[in-house]
Image (cartoon, rainbow, N blue to C red):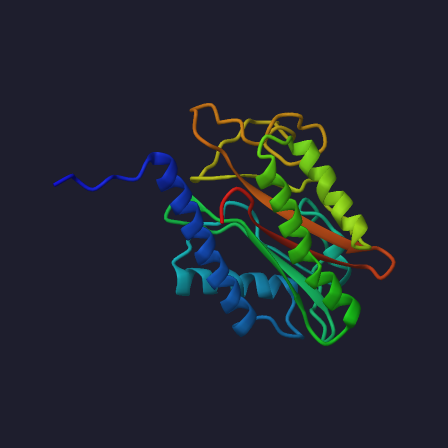
Length: 234
């Protein structure tokens, strides 16, 4: 009788990242059901998310800052630190988290609309098909560069009638802490200037895994929408 085939290190890494993302998705479902409401400030919502993640999902560490943006703050990129704002009854908001599940990083973002404003709903709803189109293009050409995928994301946003709001369209993800080179703001990101194929292995010869980010903005109305999840898996 043959011994069972053990998963390869690459398969184990992929499975761990997928499991971390599945946990993050469940966390976001709980956030939507239990925490998001008018009248709560962004900072209070962020603290409530931290407590929920720890109490219900065992998350004790987030590998990047928790981002909660509403209304005009949804126009801003990750690096910004806007003034706190209270979420309103007819608002749009997004949450971007980097929870660590059993030493594996998740990076997940989702947009929520309170009320029935059709423009806000369309902005939110356009995230999924744009994300899917960008992911499909990458799957068809996994050696595309980070710069090429960023341009594609911008073009898809424009075609849908929006502006792409991010300076990047994604980044590496992995076992905490993931591969990092001090001062490198190009080759580890899906961004202009990254002319390296995304499927290049890391310094240890391992397959790299990437997060895809879509940030759509309507500057005339002063609103944006954001989503992110795994590009290379799922």
